Image (tube, rainbow, N blue to C red; front, top):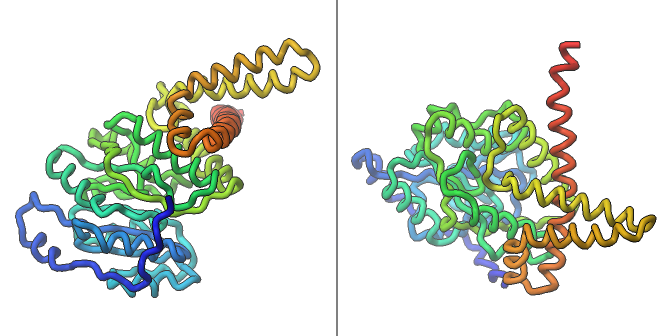
Length: 355
């Protein structure tokens, strides 16, 4: 069910806690929310409105406007947050996040996307985790199971993300800036986000944190609502260019495949079953016996992903589950093809240079 639109009247953040935390002992947590935006539109307003209603209000909110042309900076100023404007052309969200981190006063940096609405208890849950587990250096949460946009593609994309984060190991070697928090001294020690990476710089930071012996936790109880409207073309483009290609380049050369998030080895077997299904489908027009192979491959794919497809059924019924399973089948095809092509290209590139 779509949440009703919130009031357009700005709600201002409580700032009284900043002085209290600045003068308190070093165990106190002072939250700076860092939110990059480029033409955020109404999603930015909804994101700021949600932050303003937090039961644990942020001590500081910094919005970094990455050369927006839709007045995002002026909208943010209506909420009495600190606005940093990048006026010499868009520099990208991670350059913006690094700028926000440099300007932050808090000892906890909380990264929230401008198309995400926190729950009223999101920041409170982050605070409880960090106080109860001082060994945690960084943590991140998950999208909830009730995305704002109810189209098939948007629901599938967000529910897949939710499912993966809800069923992945707590100790992670990745990070997520959709809703993630990191201790300020740790972020500074690691040098922030590596802007030389093309994409998935949050995931790259998580890998560096893990290699440095830091603890990163995936906390599935910390949830936020995604406001983005996904279209099929934008989803495929994002999955390939923002996820599959950089993920492949990141893991090629490692001695073992990371078995978390969407890199579980079971997904590789699922991709093989998907390609076998497609292959038998095409072959079946020439050799009828291939239809049997297609059915067996489809059954294998269904068994491997039974929990996921059952989750889709629980969330939207049989019609949605069928559509989501079809989109997942498509995802397995193009993501695995991208993995094969890029891993082969990456492994062959050094040989070409030597020749």
